[in-house]
Length: 344
Image (cartoon, rainbow, N blue to C red; front, side, top):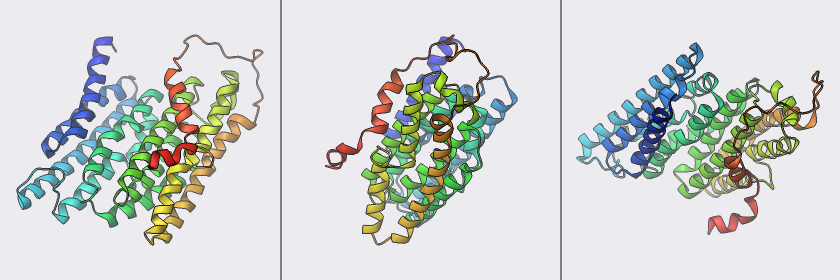
């Protein structure tokens, strides 16, 4: 892809997200979402391969359907209330439709089936964009409409997503699919808390973005497409294998790492709202996710694969820039001590 084309596509992608997150009119939000979807289609399909084409088609169909559902929901609301203002969603039917549409956009259960397949058909860098940047626009809409969304639907979808994210990842060997199920589980936690404490949801989103970015950059650096590939990651950089282990444990939500903060705050808030059963199910489902994070941790850090190569280091033909990794790693590992500062 030529530099000019890449620049136009990336700019359109960023513009679409910014338009959606800053708009107060439903039609402008819809325009932003469409720009976002149409910009990433060429990025997914630029690998001239049937898998990439299939992934781009699946992504386009699901996102177009979700956008149409958002437009339908806002039209019904405008018809009933006479306003296109995003914050004035007063009709119950529109709210349930909007909740379902946003869940489909984000890839939450039970509308999650497209996410692992699309990630598997994309390159690692494209998968990084889909699991991080592409979540921002729907999340912005969820934050803007948090007071009006259907709480029951969101909590049920949140619990289901956390469980599916755990169960689905148990049987996977591909790192991109594991990251997809990890994303589904994290989105479940965010959805559960979204209508009660929006600031905790924003905090969770920020930490999810930092941890996922770190993890993907390390997978890109070590060229690890499968769990088996992670066994030779130490030949690229022994330090990186240690960081990968810590990032995986942080994704699993173990103290004293960053990933523990959102889980701790969400469980605390749910308990305060007399929703102990929901908190228990979420906590148990996070154990399932922790199991597959530990699987990668084990192969990456605690085992030395039987190597047939005479050299201890991989050839580095194309050095990958590590600046984003340097910025994202401290955020995804060492934020726990400043929790009181974040909350104040």
